[in-house]
Amino acid sequence: MRIAPPKQTARRTAVVGALTLLAAVTVGAVGQVPTASAHNYLVSSTPEAGSVLTSLPPEFVITTNDVLLDFGGENTGSAGALEVQGPDGLFYGDGCVTVSGPSISTAAALGPAGDYTVIWRVVSTDGHPVSNQFAFTWQPDAAQVASTGSAAAPVCPTASDAAGAAGGDDSTGATSGDSNAASAASSDDEFFSVLAWGGGALAAVAVAVAVTLLVLRRPKLGAGPGSDSRPPGDI
Image (cartoon, rainbow, N blue to C red; front, side, top):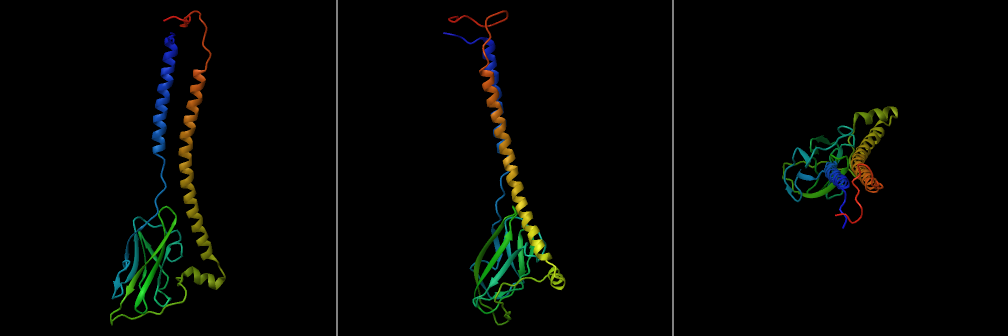
C-alpha cells in the first residue's frame, strides 16, 4: 500500500478547495444573469370584456400590469392602437390614442346597438409589441347619440402629417422606422447582456479545469535532498 507524500496530498487538497470555491462563485454569477423581462398583459379595460354598455364612457381604456413604452409620442402609431369595430363592420373613433403609465386610451365613440370588438395593440415594457381583442355589447339608452363609422380603421391626424402633406415630407415614416430600430436595439442589448454573463461564467470554469489538469499531471520529482518521495511499499 502506498501513501501519497504530504506535499502532494496538500497540493491536491488545495486544488480541490480552489475548484469548489470557483464553482460556488460561478453558480452565484449565473444566478445573477439578468432575465428577459416578461411581456405586459391585460389587467382591466373600459368597457370590460363581455359587458353590456348602456351609456358611453368618456374613454375606452386598456390597462396592463406594467408601464408601456411610447417611442414616438402621442398619436404617432408607435404608441399603440385602440380600434373599435361595430356590428356593421365599420370602425368608430378618431384613431388617436394616449399612453399614460400602464394604460392606453382613446375617446369613446359608438354607432348602432349590437356587439362590438375592441382590438388593441401596445408596446410592452420589454420592447415587444403585445396585442389582443375582446367583445362587448352596446345597448344605448334614448339619450345616446350614434357616431358615424368608417370602412377602414381611422388614423389620427398629427401636425407632422399636415406638414408632410404640404411639403412632401415623410417624417411620419422616419419616426416609425426610428421607433422600430429602438425596439430592436433594446432586445439586442438584453440578449448580449445575458450572453456576456453566461460566457464569462463558462470561461472561468474552462480555465479552472485546464489549470487543474496541468497541476495533477506534473511529473513527480525523484528522491533527493528535501524530497518527500518514499520507496514503493513504504507505509
